[in-house]
Length: 431
Ligand code: EPZ
Image (cartoon, rainbow, N blue to C red; front, side):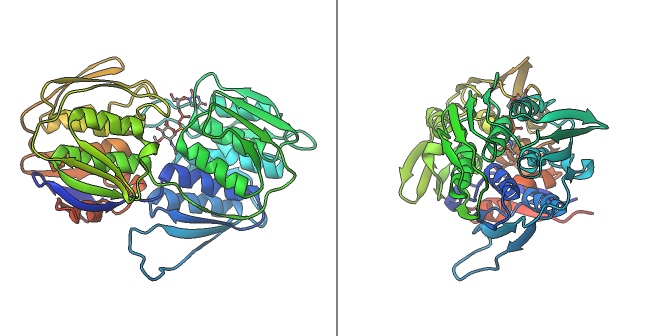
């Protein structure tokens, strides 16, 4: 298994290009199941999760063509993938594949919408919490599907004549639930109203792509979305929105090490709450035509009090990275995690680097320390892993981050992007 070795202490200076968002690319790729015509996606990040989803879609009969390199493109320029689901030959998503990536459960809605039935493995537990799918199933039932659980699989059947428009009110904001409701509703008969919908930019990006395919959607990005079902969808060409979590992660890395970095292609409005928090910690944030510039020169890190919330609040997917930054603040910070109940797995590993963090239910108290010191660490999920990278960049000496496959799931060319800005980061190939 590969490891990453980081020697801390160097400030970050330069330019980091921001990739397309993993969490937008995945549902966009899944939307290809809704049409027999090609869906061309640009700016798709080169990530292990994208590769795995290509395999899963291939199993349903989706052909994928990845465009070769074009003049001016670099390793970090996103790829163009053309997905064609001319015919769906298998409506089962097996346990072996779904258990490796939860988002693949989202194939349920487009398969039922287009084929009238689907059999999708329940994804099972996950390092950041129990993560049920009851609200996704509720959305499908509201649209008229009959859903049963058989042998660990969700089996869904559309009524004769297909899914029907409905009023779906989510009792809790859910990104996957909103993706599911949208992908089910676009081909349903009549009108669907989705209330308390997730307002995350990745939902708006999926809706924009569905609209380009011919869907009729109003209000995406707001908490009420209204969909008028259409008989069929066509092909489209769509570019994946920049990754707000990757943007926030590198912004926190710069705030941690000090320096001056342009996050090229980043869109500040996608993570305003996180940028506001970073400014409170003492980082200088400037929106430019080219992206977001982050600077911290001299001056310490101020402590903050932050609660994770659905968009437009502070995202849970940046909670671990913020905690890493606050380990070196001048005073005590407080972070409350309200989205996932078990998302503090990074705390023990940060402690191995010398961080002082106390947990009290869903609240973490972080007492800033003068210095962190390098150590071997590992993490159980993607965002926790990258929080260890951020801490390591400012720690004295050498840190080895094990289980790098978590990072490869969600961060494109991490070592190259950090390395070019002066960080000493090296991948060590596994035994
Ligand atoms: C998406 O997960 C993201 N994943 C997550 O990013 C992100 O943390 C999360 O949204 C919240 O922003 C992808 O986009 C692939 P939810 P999702 O449904 O859709 C509860 C990462 O690191 N809930 O919005 O699975 C759930 O337990 C990942 O990139 C139910 O109770 O999250 C949670 O408390 C990790 N029943 C809350 O809702 C359900 O049926 C929000 O979850 C569904 C969810």
